[in-house]
Image: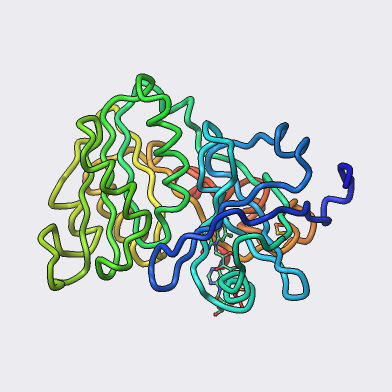
Length: 278
Ligand SMILES: Cc1cc2nc3c(=O)[nH]c(=O)nc-3n(C[C@H](O)[C@H](O)[C@H](O)COP(=O)(O)OP(=O)(O)OC[C@H]3O[C@@H](n4cnc5c(N)ncnc54)[C@H](O)[C@@H]3O)c2cc1C
Ligand code: FES
C-alpha cells in the first residue's frame, strides 16, 4: 500500500510481540506493513496513536517506546471496554490499524539541565516510560532523575523488567510503592501522593511530570503545590475521550483547546489558564 492522504484512514501494522504486563494490561509492539513508512516514521515522546481493531473501533494510546528506539512502536493497553477488550484478543502476527503520531509532546528541550521528577500510577507509567527511556538514551542532558511509581498491588506494576533495571542504575532514583501490604512485598506501601509528601523532593531546578488515575493526579498536584513547585514546572498528560484525533470533530475540547491537537501534554500553568466548564 502507498501513503494515504485521508487522515481518518489508518495505516496497516503487524503486531510482532504481545507482552502480558499485569492481569489487565498488555503491551503490543507493532511495525507498519509498509517498510518505507516504518523507516521514515518519526514522532516525539508523549505523542499518541489511534489503534483500530477492524470491525470493532478505534481508541487512543500513547506511543510508549521512545523515538530513540525505532525497531517497533510499543503501545500498552488496559482493558476498559469494547476496543481495549478486542485488542486484548490480538495475537502476534495479527494486523491492526494505526493513525499516528497525533497530539503534542513533552517539552524535553525545556527540561534539559534540570532535575526530573516522574510521578506515576498504574497504566499512567506508559506516557512517562517514553520520556524516561528517551532521557536515559540522552542521559548527559538531564540532571537527577527520580521516579515515584505505584500501583494497587505488586502484580499491577507495569514494565517489571525495566523497573528492575532502573532500580539497579546508579543514575536513577526509583521509589516503588503499592497501596497496601502484600505477601512478599518488602518495599514501600502507601498511596503515591503520600509517598511524594514523605520524600519531599526539592522544587529547585526540578520539573515534575505526572500521569495516573485522576484521583492520584489531584492529590499529587496538591502535594507539589505544598512543596512549592512552580505551576510551569508541573507537567501532566490528560486522557479525555477522543474521536478524530486531529482537531476536527470537537469531541475533546477543554475550554478553547482541543486535547487531541493542543494536548494531551499540558503544564499546570496552562491548565489553570483555561476557562472552567461551568
Ligand atoms: C491521550 C490519551 C492517551 C491514552 N493512552 C492510553 C494508554 O497508553 N493506555 C491505555 O490503556 N489507555 C490509554 N488511554 C485511554 C484509552 O484511550 C481508553 O481506555 C480507551 O479509549 C477505552 O476504549 P474502549 O473502547 O475499550 O472503552 P469503551 O467501551 O469506550 O468504554 C469503557 C469504559 O471506559 C470509560 N472510558 C473509555 N475511555 C476513557 C477515557 N479516555 N477516560 C476515562 N474513561 C474512559 C467509558 O466511559 C466506559 O465506562 C488514553 C487516552 C487518551 C485520550
Ligand atoms: S478528537 Fe476530534 S477534535 Fe479532538
